[in-house]
Image (cartoon, rainbow over all chains, first blue to last red; front, side, top):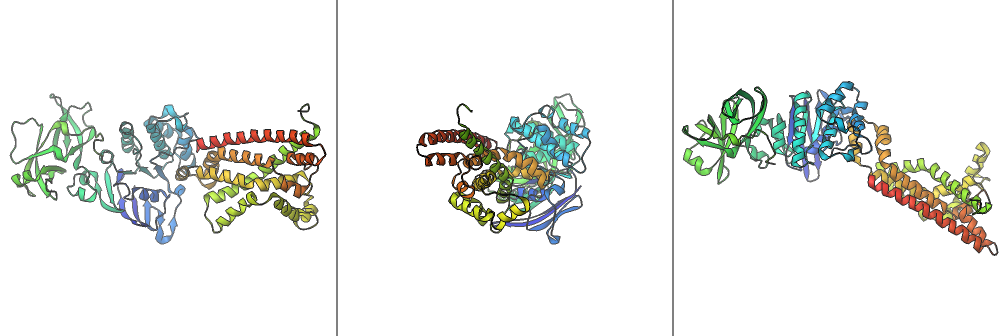
Length: 364
Length: 229
């Protein structure tokens, strides 16, 4: 499971010159503001846009190589493309839409797989309907199913939630999570919404003005104090992968992570469940001595790794807790009072209620 | 019908319908191919081809009839060759009337089909391609069904326009009762005879009714085409 992309194309005033490779399976987010070149890249991978120069290799199969004048048509590429506007065929029923790619696939799956995917997406009851009789969320799910059933080598998702309102997004996100966890398919997910990226992606490629500004694990990149320099100014905050710990008697749930345990408001999930949480930089308080009597449930000893203070009013402090990286935003005044420098141990104080366990889109 | 129309009148009416139907359906595959060419491809000289297809709209129909007569006249050229080898003769025959009507109404069909093809979402074609559909597959299963209402509108409009053709027919295939005397030619004939105004008026009312019926149908079809687009 791998994909290598390197492309260059000039659109007059705007030049695309992007290079990245994804060697791991899982979800890779292609993140950046509108006009950064995200859709052009995904179109080049799908074969609907031919860049002037470059090379694209999907799972060891070269689909584009300008040096060899090699260009496979979209139908030969085996990519499952979920378009932002769903693009369901208006003259076909949901059932015929779903099977459009399946019927044409060379390596078509068994019939049982159709039922499994249809059930996974919760669209069993829509089969006989025509696309115009579907809600926006239902259209997205059908488009997702149609792409999956064409037996692709890679799934390309071009802002599949952008056309939906917040409530519909919340309806689709769980399906995308299930897909990520159950379908062993690499996914390239184009998005300019950080909450979707934080919730879904394993890896992130940040694009800025047609170039790759940064790439890496979501856990490393989103908590990086240097992130604002690469990606406009998205709200800083660490995404942490945790496991639900043993049940407690105090209406709190323990979340174990690589570096300690976080206590959050009680969650009704079984022990051992993997859960991503997000701790925003403004929600972390720092102290040089351990506070003894305090309402916050989490006081974690960490190490200062770096400080970024290009703003006149506040500073971002990079923290390391075990192997987990976090980030805290404090005022310049606090920074000077605490004399925080790399290597200095600090206590991070995190209120349980501020740990985002739902990953609802509150920042965009 | 026989109580309302005289035998000569119904003969002219049914001949008109037959000539127009044959003209429109025989031209349809060519019109579709031309529309596809103009809507989906870029090539050198496209503007010239586009212009040529639309020439019959502005050329005097009499000139077209005369051109056809020189090409398909049985004494020489293509007309003589067709007659000698296949026994096909266009001059003085209803098939010639259909040929003339087909040429004159060709631009109507091409225009309507081209608009329908251009209106058929390119994004859906792209989607079909990523799902493994080849060129023919996409044409048959995506483009054609989406363009269908537009094609119907084009066919009906061309049919209605064909019912009114006069100049090209009378020049190319003359005015033979039962063979080439369509409704407009019958009106003209009535006017040539002394005291034929009443007959001409009856035939004109018939022509107006036909025009109204088919233009209404064409309007309904193009409204449907806009809704589906």
